[in-house]
Length: 234
Ligand code: ATP
Image 1 (tube, rainbow, N blue to C red):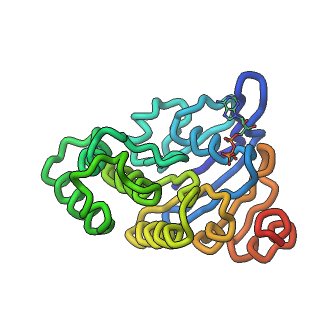
Image 2 (cartoon, rainbow, N blue to C red):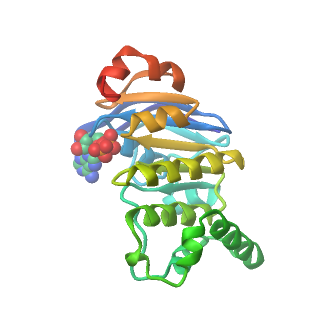
């Protein structure tokens, strides 16, 4: 469904990605793990058209997307939940969710999807009239994911959804991600929490200073000695 070939990205003259190849099939979870500054967020930003690429190509559902504007890429069905769960603090939970459907005009279907999303996230349902700024970190993460689902994505990309969350909330977010995948939406998951990511994903890439250092079935990487030492605390 998504093919990244020989992707290079530079910030000014500094290379953040040095020719990476990533394939995301049309089901399941692909994870990209790696240390701070390895280029994980940059990879996701390049997919979403938020940073210009300097070389290579990104193909989604058979179509080149690497020169398209971000809103065109959302329109094709790629929803991106950025790092730091950016919600609109001064809108209510419901307004935030509905803002995810900004490119859609199918009102009845939007209402149905809204009902569906809040059914998925009971905490958001209880708080639908509350300002987003008053939510806890975990609830804001759910809201950011729920908002992305309101665009009816064909693919969801998640940047560090577990960051800053309590262990209980991390479990909850993991459950939600599994649920999304079971409904047929493939997920690209960027995580520093390698343990969680390798447990959830089918296939994994390890990014080190802008290059793919390792790739393979997630369970195999979980048992890989280098991965264990560098990313799983021994
Ligand atoms: P983290 O887990 O810390 O978010 P990451 O793997 O997502 O790390 P990126 O954010 O993709 O890494 O950063 C990759 C490299 O690009 C880093 O060296 C970073 O300093 C640099 N970089 C990222 N964004 C910019 C920017 N806007 N301007 C200049 N350099 C940047």
